[in-house]
Image 1 (cartoon, helix red, strand yellow):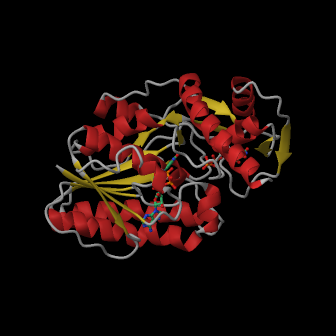
Image 2 (cartoon, protein in one colour; image 1 turned 180 degrees about the vertical axis):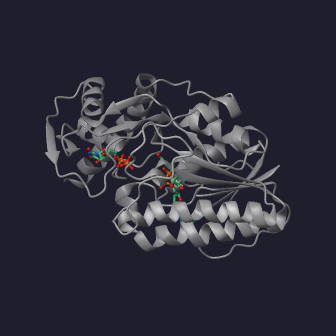
Image 3 (cartoon, protein in one colour; image 1 turned 120 degrees about the vertical axis):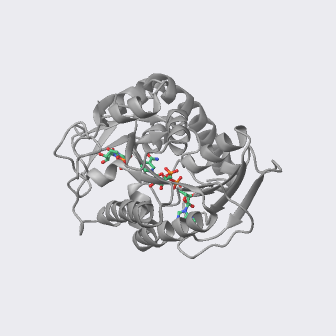
Length: 321
Ligand code: NAD
Ligand code: UDP
């Protein structure tokens, strides 16, 4: 099979490229590296079944030959990134989704889009089930991401209903692991970077807000299973183990043996107060369940960031900073 993955140079996308190659697919990775990193491809860049297309998927893309699967994962994903690139985020969620759907339709390919728990906004239903319509501020700062993803879901369903494209929608809840950028601004790279450098861990608000963190290999397994089903409605994938951000900071600090203090900063606008996936549908439909518990996933990710921080410090010393 030949599988095209947009955003394949990003955190999740690069793990997907690796997984599809391991399953024997040829993989075409499409990325413009607005938030991704070339080194994410290091482990498989030389595989003869891997090819890279440098392209902004908000513009149409033509690919020669057959394609069996199109996975649309391109989009800034961290709140800091999508606030830095609001218009690019809206375009890749809308035009990028349209372009990738057009490609899937032309090739008769399976299609899967990366949606998000952010479609539920600041939720008034807890845990979040797929039939909850959400509570999103369309004109707030996060609206550029949330509404792009909501539009994306609507466009995907329209292509399924109108053109009978074999579409799939995964609603991803906070996922972490190796190949996240140390400076992407999300809570885990921030806390790990700060703990490893001995800087204060920055908690936004009072730290009572919750998130539920899923290790990347679990997510990739769920995506792989979902793609080969005949299910077209959205499916939540995430780890329902919920934690407050204060507890999360303390956990990372203890795990890294850091003496960092905690610094409280203002809570960003529209920051969801609670988030936890209801994964009953994924359990039933895919026989899927997260396997990597938070302690194990965090330990693996911490080893990755230890190397990143060490090489950052070596570079600083070399520059005489
Ligand atoms: P990431 O920033 O590491 O990866 C996104 C990739 O998309 C980057 O390589 C970036 O360069 C690329 N990209 C962005 N706009 C593009 C464009 N116009 N053309 C081509 N490439 C473009 O983020 P991630 O965490 O790996 O997220 C991947 C996908 O999963 C995103 O769609 C995101 O919305 C979704 N998602 C992620 C999470 C999470 O917790 N990581 C949660 C929910 C949804
Ligand atoms: N957060 C924090 N300190 C940080 C970064 C984030 O307290 O240095 C909080 C943020 O306000 C949010 C949670 O951690 O409540 C998760 O933030 P993240 O940016 O990782 O993603 P989100 O789940 O909000 O999309």
